[in-house]
Image (cartoon, helix red, strand yellow):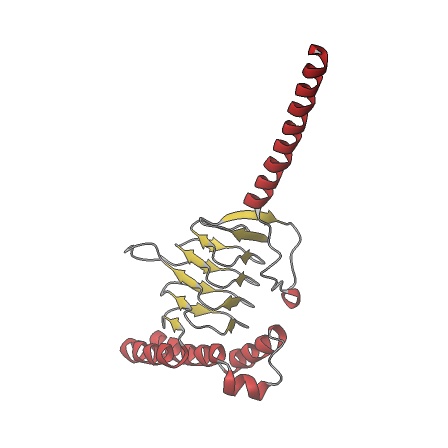
Length: 221
């Protein structure tokens, strides 16, 4: 557990430019506090002390604003930035070097039994307010855009935006964990791009109509 905590501190220092040193992370970062409390609750849950684990989980939510079910499996180097409003459901599995921003939800879509929450691969970024709902996998090195609602599996090395979420960028080159792309602004917007193409096409057609009208007017004279 202590090895995981050390890597959690390292993840904050690497991905948050506001973090100045390890002591500041330990004392002032609710995302780190939530992870430490969760790792204890998860240990209790695995050792069949489930009620105690749930009580600790509720205390965790009260103290940090982050709700993580004790059964959630979390890998190394998770960074929860700010974290207020983050909800992670019971059967969620999170890989290594994942980054989750405030207001994100890793949840289910109903009252199914068994595996009903997502599996998040390695080096994934889940942006502010994103909702990943269902028992599917988000592939390694993928990015979920702010406010996206993801209801289907995401291939590796992909960028997903929109409601419902759709893949707008897919690459074949693996991104090393030390080069996690945290840019949440420069994401493709296929709807805007389509509207721009239609606008330019409409302007072209209007110009051609004007030219034809002018030509017919000259011929009539």
